Amino acid sequence: MKSSAVGTVKRAYASSARATGRVLERVGLLDDQPPPRDRRIRHWAFSLTRAHDSIGISKLDVPWWTYGAIDDVERWIAGRSTPVRAFEWGSGASTIWLSKRLGQGGGTVRSVEHHAGFGTMIQEQLADTPNARLDIVEPEESADPEIGSAKEGHGRLDFGKYVRHIDSVAADGGPFQLIVVDGRAREACLRAALSHLDDDGIIVFDNTLRRRYRKAIAAAPVTETVHRGLTPTLPYPDQTSVLRKR
Image (cartoon, rainbow, N blue to C red):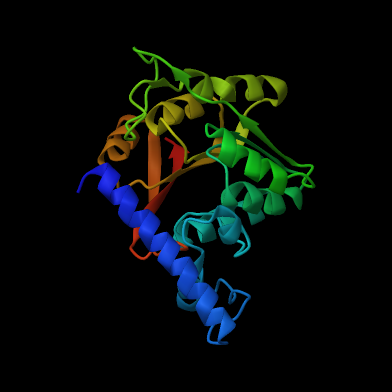
């Protein structure tokens, strides 16, 4: 199935799932509050009605990673004795989730988003969150991109400034203990992340079933913990990886 057809199917699924959720809430068959996350199947079933809705996902108090990765990262944060400085390529529910947990220990999260409309929406959600900041760095039109994206329709866009945004953020405060790779040009983002990651830090790399991401991880000097399985709002299993410097 071509990417455009896949996108159409995903949008249709998300729309129908959210509509079904509203109907079930109105007739009393679905609570308006999510079950606890440790009731995994029920939480996941509830989440299906928030498909492709970042604000809706954030209200479930989860990032858009596999449940196994969420548990792993939450344990890692809880085990830290010093504040965690995080950086994300790709904003959304994870930005809100991280800001809550890192803020409890004096940590911060900096996120960069390539899509201005989506980024502005998330910035509004973070308006009262002092330990989180989201920057919007849009790609530039180019006939010969320095750093491109394999996503359909992005072939003439250069994501160089977006990928390198971590350099300027790191210059203001040093390395990061947690880096999330979940936006565009992820292979280049992974390479850029390694020079700004503390030796005992972690990289959360999402959707790592994709062949190009498997190659990028295999070529990097990292060890990988794979978390495959259920993901909030997705009707199929996916995979999120937690990477550490080798």
